[in-house]
Image (tube, rainbow, N blue to C red; front, top):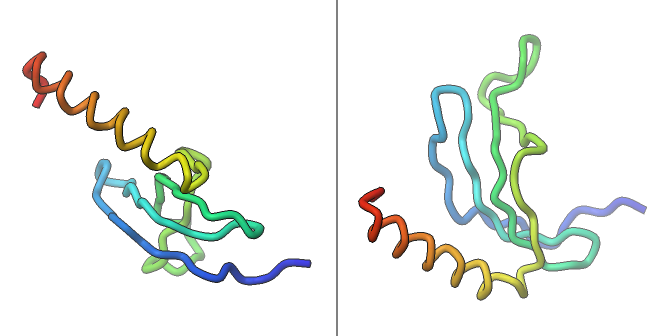
Length: 86
């Protein structure tokens, strides 16, 4: 039985390059609370050009793992700054 998710909350959307965007969202999947960072692209010819579609590129994890992901991103930010990457 397929049913609509209870929620799908877009958190962020930013351009990755000329053809791709990165979207972050909180959503329900099969009764589980999830967080996704996914690459989206414009569909090919014959599709609605205003509607982007998700690719398989990305990450989806349980929302309960957000604190660990936050810690990892925080470490990455500090390390990138320390190495002059930001």
